[in-house]
Image (cartoon, rainbow, N blue to C red; front, top):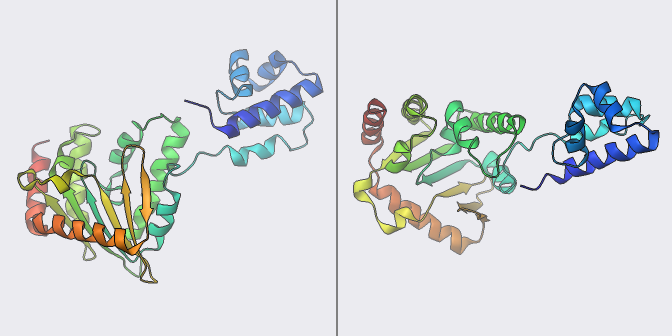
Length: 266
């Protein structure tokens, strides 16, 4: 995995300032309390420079705050890099309809489920980035209970309830959480059982969103594809597909019963 450009640029700046000040890599490592190879990795962009190294290098090399200023650009991205446009639309949406095939949708995930899922992201991320992304996902969920209320309609393919993400205890809590959020007045949670599977049900997840200005969007994603549609024809096709899928799903009450049964099987 290529190191982020911010790491490479910041590491190179540490090296340039250190060389200019006549400070050896060994001296910087000793002063900062790191191993020589760790400082080398930071300077070469293979490891993210830490705040401690930036502070010591800034003072030792006489950078007068110029190296320390890089810290603002080394913060982990709170979201996956492919989806910032979608997140902006989601935040302002007054209605969201979502169909998920293999995963519980992000707004309905428990913290443990989200952490287990994001920890397996490829390319892998460091612990700081992982925790920031988990926290960001939890902050997104404030939308579920924010006033004025938005409307949410979820259809989840039964296979998503049996993936075992995070292990039995995590999945058990996740399934009970789906029951709890499905009881809220502005949220509908339905399960599409595997016995009602059709080819259209396996084409992948989709999300429909409506803005306060009554503008409609459709969002689809795949292995390496993340697309937010706004043209009426495409969004209309996605809406028809979602409507067909929802008609095949269990009712909210039947879905809650299936969720309870799946939780007991964990």
